[in-house]
Length: 173
Image (cartoon, rainbow, N blue to C red):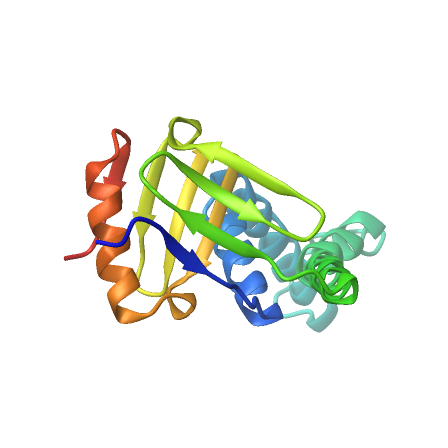
C-alpha cells in the first residue's frame, strides 16, 4: 500500500442527484410523505374521473389535496435539482481543483484556498457500495466518493487502509 492515496474528483450532476435522492428516500419520514401524497393524488383522480358513486369531496377537491402532491412530486425534486446544479456550477466557476488525500492518520481535502485535515475518528463508518465509498459522519451527514475517481490499485490500497482504521466498516472483497 502507498503512504497516501490521492484522488482528483470531478463530480457530475448525475452523481450528486443519485446520491442525494438515494439518501433522501431512504428515510422513513420521506417514505411516509410520499405515501400520503400518493393517497391524496389517488383520491383526487377518483374524484376527477368519478370512478365510483361514492362522493369523497362534496364541495370539490380541497386545495391542499392538489398542492401537496404537486409539491412532493414536482416542485421538491425540481428544487433539489436546481440547488445541486447551482452548487456544482459554482464549484466549477471558482476553478479550484480539489484534491482528496487519504492516509492512516487523516482524510485531507486540499484546495487552492484551503487545506482541511479530518481525523478518521470524526467518521462513524465507511461503507462501500457498488459504485461509491460512503463516509458517514453521523446519521445526517455522509460524504461520497465515486469509485471512478480511484484507479484499480488505489481501490485495493484504500480497502487496506480502511481495514487498519478503528471505525465501523462495510467493504466489498
